[in-house]
Length: 90
Image (cartoon, rainbow, N blue to C red; front, side, top):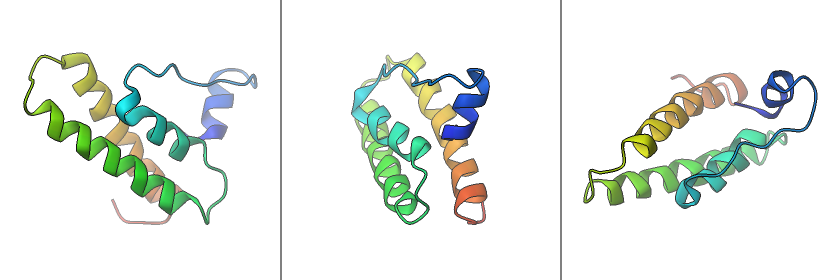
């Protein structure tokens, strides 16, 4: 979800999603909220790296279904960021 969409969903008020999984959500949130198109590729890469590292850690501990779902949702949003904001194919 980008910054515009966050504001739209929250009726124009400032909105920051709650961080439940700081191992990767801080980087992901920074990518979602980045407005500078020059900085966005770097933010997106950092978010993807953090998510990948967390997925690797979760492979050792299968008891995190809520976080796994959050990661799936984040990866779906990542595809939207890449396609719409950076012009990358999906």
